[in-house]
Every structure is written in C-alpha cells, then in structure tokens.
Image (tube, rainbow, N blue to C red; front, side, top):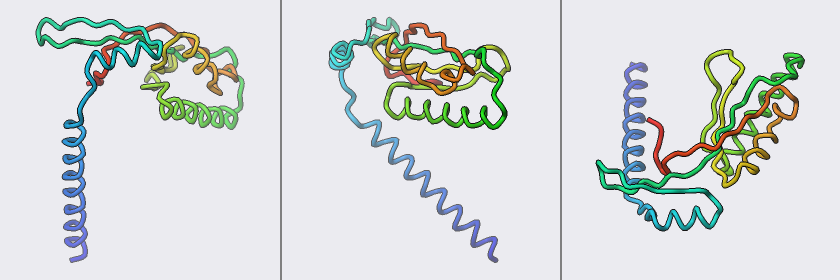
Length: 162
C-alpha cells in the first residue's frame, strides 16, 4: 500500500513539474524579443564585431556576432600531486562557473578523449584581449596545467545548440 501511495504522490509531483515547465516555456516564448536593429545597436555600442545577412529560404535577417573560442590545451606543468590536481580542478570549475554567471562565457566543456586539447570555452566578449585575460585568469592556466589558444569565432546571435 505504501508503494502505491508513494508512486501516486511521485506521479502527481512529476506531472505538476511538467505543467510548470510548460507554463515557463510558454511565458518565455511570449516575451518580446528585441529587434535585429536594436540588438545591432546594443552590440555595436559595447564594441562587438557583427554583420548580418538575409536568409534566402526564410527571409529572416540573421545577425552574426564574433565570439572567441578558447582551446584549453595540455600544459607543460603536469607534475602536481593528485590532491593538488583535484584542488586545481575545483578552482577551474569555479572559475568557469563565474565566467558563465557574469555573462563572459556562453559554453564550456571538456573533450571526451585524452588528447592535447582538453576542452573549450566560448567567450562572449568584445575583444580578443578581454577573452585572453579571462582565460588566463583560470587557476589551471596559472598553474601551467593548461595552456590557452584563442581564435575569433563567428556564430548567429540567439541561435541555440541542437
């Protein structure tokens, strides 16, 4: 009997969560998005490099923005003890979390192999100098466990990963 009650309560909870998610998604879809012109003005005022084009298929204006992709590469100093490496990893993740919270980074993640390129971070900042400064502030980079290689990268503004 307890199992049936638990399953019923859990089912009710999960269905309410789904309804709340649907309401949240609908509310966010109805929010008015700024026009391409407004977005261009805002980005230009902040110093971002942009361009736009008209998609022939949809007729929509696509706004492209320059981002900076930082490749986090295996550094020369890999001599840390396991405890030191674990501590640096926690500080590294905290740094990346802070970059995301402050709006400086849009996505970060490790690669799934054990190659020399360990991961990437995409910085949403107006200049290479800012991206370089933020990437080099990472505790793993400061310790020499990772090295940074940064390249300008263009992507459509507002598009999400699929």
